[in-house]
Image (cartoon, rainbow, N blue to C red):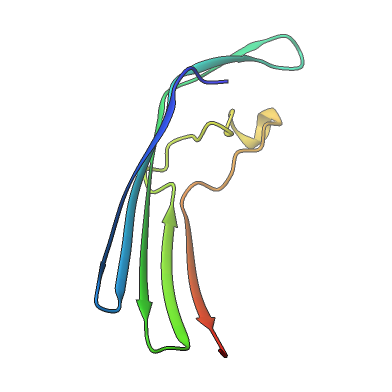
Length: 101
């Protein structure tokens, strides 16, 4: 477990637009792997963004970006070769929602 983990969010909206910017910090730590070796994981700052648009009363569009700093996240311990299988880093999700009510 890291010693310190915090997150800060800034949300806003204007007319039909919404937005969010967030920063997550995880302090450095050392873990012990199954074979007894130790691995150091440096401190990590993650940046995320979200933009939303209400097209009308029934349709909403949004774009969300995760891990925009592309640092190794706390669940990324190394490379695919060492068996820890890190995630893909930056991720973007484009979403369209339809409400019938």
